[in-house]
Image (cartoon, rainbow, N blue to C red; front, side):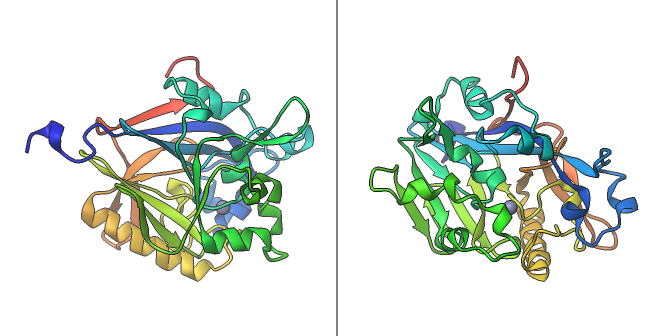
Length: 303
Ligand SMILES: [Zn+2]
């Protein structure tokens, strides 16, 4: 088999940095004391740590797939201040433009889950002050369990879901919606793996290329500082399930040399996993990325 005839040899995986924002450091690290987490993630004067909002774009010769949509543009000045949203709007359009694509070119939108910092970019407000779908030609993919939960979350996590981000998908005129049940290869070489510790029906996404396999971790392991067992976000609904799910993903990533893609790490976008002598996992930066992997930042002038 020649290299060019390998499956997915023309596939490109592009990490789009849609925005920078900030969340409370204590909430991001749960039970871990601040003296431990602030070494790697220094907090600002309001106890917030730096966060990136990254999306993954898969470009095949015959289709484009976007995984998650960032925080989007529908934010008041007060909310922008609370979450320290720092980005030239609209960040996703700017990032897509750098690879000569527009939202209308996206064929599939895969949602890891519908929390506002992942689903915010699904819509925008038009000049008539109406909410419109950002990706009018895309089929949208969500785990059925997360879709149900997002419309009726618990009082504890209700603040993480904004129904206006995704309720348009219920409309007859809306772009397509495909609800997924469990593990599934939803498109060739694009496999979703459900996790339920962070919220019910989240899915991490495994992407197969000719030269590498990637796994986009969503909020299972939001940053490279969340690899170890106790480093579970305070937001998680079932923290002990998160611990188990992290262990399983990292075990497979280590055995099969998957590259981890971090949605929220402020500096490290891609890594491999390595275990120390006490079996504790850590993230090792990918020094020379595979040919299939590219990074785009919406805020920089060049790529
Ligand atoms: Zn989340």
